[in-house]
Amino acid sequence: MLHRSRTLSRTLTFVVVAGSLAACGGSGEAAPTTTQAPVPTTTTEAPAPTSTAAPAPTTSVAETTTTIAPEPVMPLTGLPIADQALALRPALVVKLDNHPQARPQFGLNAADIVFEENVERLTRFAAVFQSQDSDRVGPIRSGRTQDVALLGSLNAPLFGWSGGNGNVTRAINDSDLISLSPTSTGGKGGFFRDKRGNETSEHTLYSSTPALYTFTPIYAPAPQQQFAYRTEGEAFNAEPATGVDVDMDGVKVNWTWDAASSSYLRFQGGKPHNDATLGQVNAANVVVLEVDYRPSPADARSPEAQTVGTGVVYVFTGGVLIRGTWTRADRLLPFTLTDASGVEIGLTPGRTWVELARVESTTPT
Image (cartoon, rainbow, N blue to C red):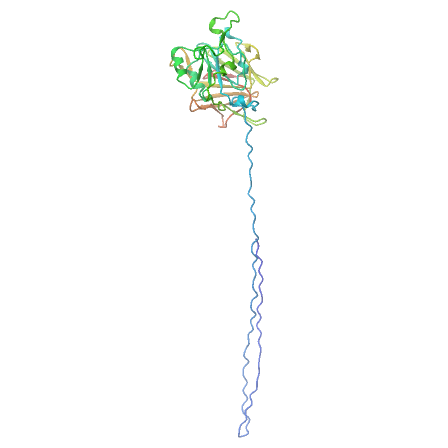
């Protein structure tokens, strides 16, 4: 604010007054004349008052930032919520067989997330359901001690399985997984046998997700979000890749990007791997976590994936590859995936497959 001022001039005025004094003497002599020096008269003009304008009031307008809350999404897919009841129900994990006699399986393409684990010279799937149901799911097989750590971030999920040896059963029963086996449900879990061909009995156990969900306990929290998801058009650091080959203890797995369906198609042993009713197995994302395997404390012949710690990750999403690091400090926490710059990797909203591969068993194509 500028201040304006005014200066007044000061003028001095001199007034001269002269007077003659006459005196009369007796001798008749003229008296001497005395001249008085003029007395200067000074007139000083009082300064006019100076007015200082008060500063005009300043009005400050506070800036308001409006933050739009992100749209709620399904915790296991990152897709918009279409049914609030589904979003609030717990996760249901079903252990699925991957023996040659078990293929094609039921329910793989209805699962939100599928983990593939090494077992004894084969692989097994932990199929995680929440946003969709499957009227038939199976063949259902036994659990492993590695399931306790792997599935801990799902917030006490329902756990559909055929059972296990005594040590594995104790590990599952002592965990926060809600055991749903033919034994633990008293034969009421919707389990049934179906021999489709020449498979042996261990490859013939089935159920359905609606039947298994009837065992949901009173307190059953929804799962926490397992991955970060990117928004449409969001930029990210990636390299071209058409897919990936993964050696899962001799099981040759391949995922190939299909631009027409915007998904990855699964091949096993050089052949398409099919869901019994929903076509070729596919996913929006394929996440390869390279992990250490150690002998299971329940059975030294059984490998146990170490899913708490850190390691190399390959994320295949949208037809490209993002290399990075996975970290997980506790079994109750989800995996955190970061790229080479330390930025969290966002997946494409949709269904995700996670390969628990041994170190240096991944070959991008």
